[in-house]
Image 1 (spheres, rainbow, N blue to C red):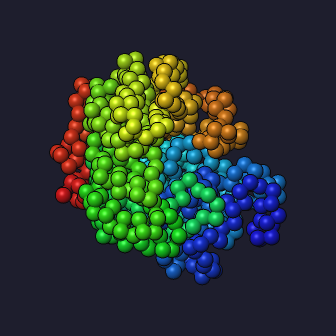
Image 2: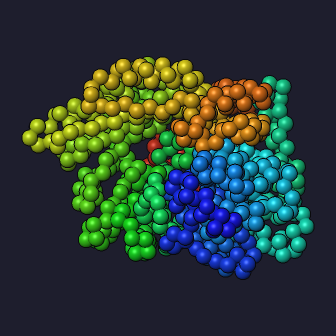
Image 3: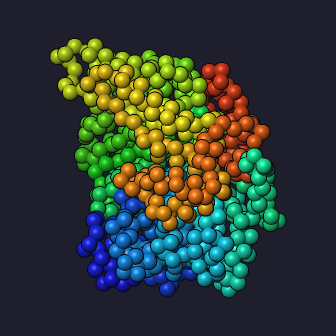
Length: 613
């Protein structure tokens, strides 16, 4: 597409800077001089995509190669898509404006299940056949990665292959192999897929046959090619301190969700919360040194002009060099009035000394995640924090002048009772009382407590992957119970849409039979399902019915001996460990974190990280 054609439609749409490219630090190359054109595809809007840390890493990683040009490809918003279809304009990349059919590889990151419809819609808008089996050697290779790739069976038939695990190394290896295959004449796509199937972490869905029992459960998942492994194990960056990290970042023209420098402190999590897929999927925990991060921060601030740094991890206060790093950063951030943000703090080990340091430039709100309203249920989910931890931390914050506190909980957790639901209201009230326990003349004004609940969704590769998900009716009942129990005007209650959680639950533990429903739903108008104004829940239910699928079947409780759709995938944490954790949950027995005592999860097989500290 020429820039002239693009300009004609950009004047008709909201936020045209979503589609122009040309931002500071974006990469400019001549596509004719490279051997591989790679489209990094994010199945959501520009402002969501440009906040993604994986994009920032892999975009610059690939573009440091002289033989490869990586361009960004995002889902156009509905107004832009309407103009594109009306004018015969196909999906294009931001850097050159070229249609993505001209690319060699299209790599989709899969950050959340409700993006699946956008993957299908983007391929349709591009003019690329949606099913992998329908694509020829002339079409781009379509691959996927990200957290949802660990069980992407509901859209497996769409992808040529998946990269499971951390992509910094894998993405270069599959690119090397693609260039070799391309130079050999691109005679047969299957030859390329056979070559990469031998690599660690590469999953080629077409190389596996899935058989089903009469009761609709899976009978077997068996390789049908000699190159395909019976179990595909994820890849990790063993020495995370030396793992690739870009020293430059693109500065967006328009506003994005996370518009700041992001420093990734470490990968993984030591905690073992039994509901958290990410905490297990990124094991073992591996850190970057404070020196490496300080140098990186200085370079990223210098090339971007940002006035805020966010420390990124699953549990920031578990970073062993946090004091040293914050001291290093504050040496120059304070002088330059650069804010320092510390999300993902643990209630039981956050420091007021640290909070006083980071508030010197600007004070932000604080979010704590007790997750459950009672100690019994916190033990079930292995949260390993007490009510005393919550209240002590809250009072510490109020005494320090904070008045904007958010409390995050889940409802629908395994073994949950009405008492646990009411415990959320009770704990929220107790936090409020900690504020009022401070003498009036000593406390800050305008207290603001926000209590939020999301609905528990059993995720693959967790101790609760076999659990039943609450019905929509049960969730509504619990939300109403909590609304009635929260009586103080000082506490605001927010809750997650049960319909969204329902659909997410269906796809989180879904199998390949759901693929036809995803494609049919897009034909029926579904897309941008994670956006309230676009979500068409009724259309999804109608589509499931049309396709002969009972979505409730995917929300049921499962037995330990059932073959799960993701059983041929390994994150390095054993199924036996998850069974042990599920049994301990039923007894309310907790498991210490990785630094206190090894629980034998299996992640030590990677020979790296916290397992060998």
